[in-house]
Length: 485
Image 1 (cartoon, rainbow, N blue to C red):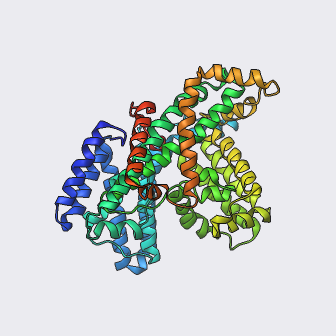
Image 2 (image 1 turned 120 degrees about the vertical axis):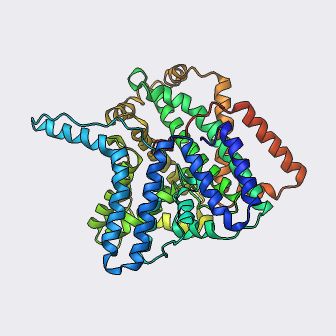
Image 3 (image 1 turned 60 degrees about the horizontal axis):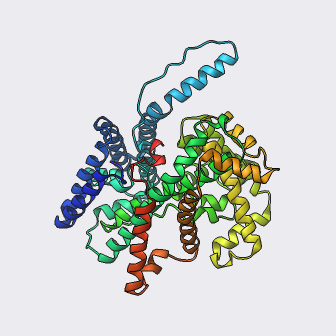
């Protein structure tokens, strides 16, 4: 069931009204039932996988607290079970084909075994959520949950089930168990945030996807400015698609008086790659920080070992995003860029200063850093979007073809896309609104600022926003990009 579908438009009000009509003690059960129905709407069979992962992690966590001497064995059992399911469905074919290619280079011919399996939606997200739970119980950071139904509701909470944010036990589980009182201001804020998320998805992401897909689906047919423009369009497509999902999820949770963690903080205004990863997919980047990077030694080691820790973390992060080498290269590239940044104290000091005092993020130096970081991130996204590493390299090389003849360069690019001036306007207006919103988000909350406006002004903004969405939105219910991960 997609957020941007008629089915969800019917589903959500039913869940919402029954949730607040039920006594507090029955609400976790209702959330569990609604969440499993939500997940089964994609494929009933794969509900067995999330149920299996939930039962294993629940049982192992309980036994850890009872059998101290066997807690390491129990942790390993939970990790093997959860990661085993993830590996089988997501990575088996990748490793089988890769192994066969490697052996083939040594003249050892092997026919790879592949499985015709559909990747269960959201498997990477709920697997990581269960892993963080059992690791936190193992470390003693949280207590194991005794009530299985409450725990199952925590793992399967439908707003963030299939594409995050990847919630931590200490934040979400207590809220699932807590008694809630309906707060109009929370619900109103949630609806406004959902509306902004739908704007990102329907107006920006789905519109740009048409142009980006046209080029990336047949890279050898195009060249020059059309490739550069495709890279730029995908950069904003993936941001608006994924952050749009997160906004809808966070806003949807607020309808039930539940606070999910912020997943994006204006990442394209970052001043370094390190700063970018403190703003992009925050729930995943902090997950890898806490459960991979820090256990490896983090930055409390030698510079060489720290570089190794960064590379391992980002290579694994790249592989998490997809079972293909171009995702691994993308992750490795971001790791290498952070290693490189660490060699320049100026960048580290500037990043730290801006993080400690956001008001200091002004002046030409800051904007130059933002521009350079954005361009680097955009070029790296080419590896993420291309079908293969060779396709990505082809795009990066040939996007500059003809740039020494600017007039012809731009004209050919526009012709390749078949864009008229009306199309340019339909892309430019939402883009300007997006940039204004994200820039305002650096120093405050644009939605809260909007709610403080006088009533007549506020309602004019609401009606203008709805009109813009109706005029420019794509209502063909396209899947969110991160569903494939």
